[in-house]
Image 1 (cartoon, rainbow, N blue to C red):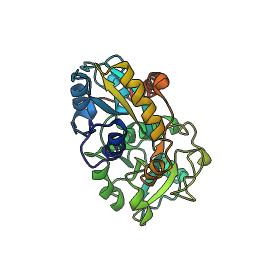
Image 2 (cartoon, rainbow, N blue to C red; image 1 turned 180 degrees about the vertical axis):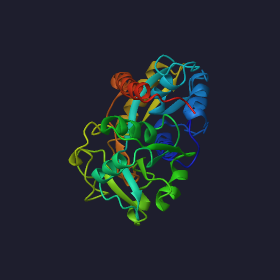
Image 3 (cartoon, rainbow, N blue to C red; image 1 turned 90 degrees about the vertical axis):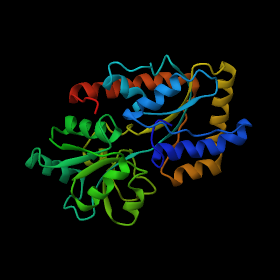
Length: 288
């Protein structure tokens, strides 16, 4: 797990490890190796060569080649695909006391005050950063990036209004949205989410092109894992994601079971790399 304990990626990894252990007949241990936007952990996994190491990959897996020109591994050549595990929508949030009540309010305020409003991100190249930069490019507005060490760290400043808005993974702000300390302006899904009834989509508010944008988590294997074992893991993962009890646990966290299997996963990675690589290029994003 190339991120620190306690975040949404780590939670997904631990949920998956707990479920895969009895299915595989051997313990599945989560080892956290955070640092450099997942580069530290991914490098460790790529160099493992023990036939037993898996990587819980997120969007950074395919974005990092655009940010780090001398990346010590190739996300496609040095890892074998297993399957996509889950996706989670993005939600555009502001503090409960913010005067902004809709996405159109945000756009109008940003147009009226170029460079005065800000957005919170968990660092350069994260989904919060890339989604906000895509929003800026599409709507021709100027918002200032304020970076934090993880999504959990940025939430207090969103609550107080120290930072204007956040394009956040649903898992991070959901409890604060439910207890009224944050307000949701929009979701990236085409239709409202059952856990956020009444919150309109970005498309419904006139902002196109975000309908298929969602953070994702995938299981990949380091070099050395036998092909037969990879096929078996893919089959077990696919079966697990169809189990009603496991799906319900995922949904309770705001995670939606995915259905991209081993044969299609690298094509999915390549499409995501093209999409976000273009945003990195157009927005002039550099690694922290």
